[in-house]
Length: 303
View 1 (cartoon, helix red, strand yellow):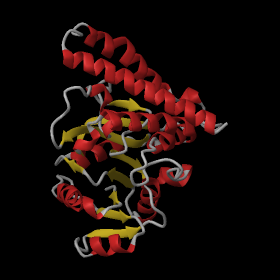
View 2 (cartoon, rainbow, N blue to C red; view 1 turned 135 degrees about the vertical axis):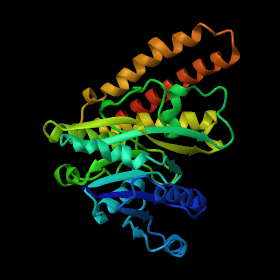
View 3 (cartoon, helix red, strand yellow; view 1 turned 180 degrees about the horizontal axis):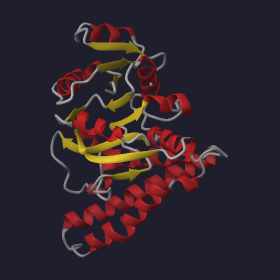
């Protein structure tokens, strides 16, 4: 039987309630986790705070440096499982989440598996916010496959990899990924591309039966957040499309853009007389513009 480790990281005492609910959802899994690892940013008060709140059943480790990618790398290095699963501290896993992820690894060519991330808006989904932009709040978006299939990369909030792939291709890049409220992203995209490029016949599976619910705070339902998160997404993509990972690897982004421009927006244009549909069209264009601005900025800054 394959062992599995679940890695969660947190950087703030204010996320304690979310984290507690997250861990409870893991303890109630149909397939019991072999190991739950909580990675903390290296702040003494944060370490003292959480070590006094969780049982010895939760392995608490401290990252050498702050930031999501550093935390994930620390978790991997301390994990004993053959399968490493990642869950955000503000997400809740469905009862069969782990079971449905792990079942995919009976295929020896599967290097990674990700599932669906459903948004759980704390104060309701803004009527002007289109489902196609759910990636902005860290969730699965309209336009993703509806059935199990191979993909380039999973969503970071709900993903897993064989531990051996990190021995072969290295760890998450630490110059991208969240750092507190810094919104750089795409670390899971970059490492997935490395895996598929360097491990022959490997594949990554998207399995929508592996479900997590991601809390979305009210502040993310704002035009300001849409712009900032979209801009940083473009900036992140510019960083990873350097000499080692050229822009030809952005096929997923190209397909998504085609979907937005040729399907999503035209379908909403049929009901453009409805204020809600018009708003969603404008917000989609607003987001695309911000991504483009971030990408161009990143390319210019990196020369």
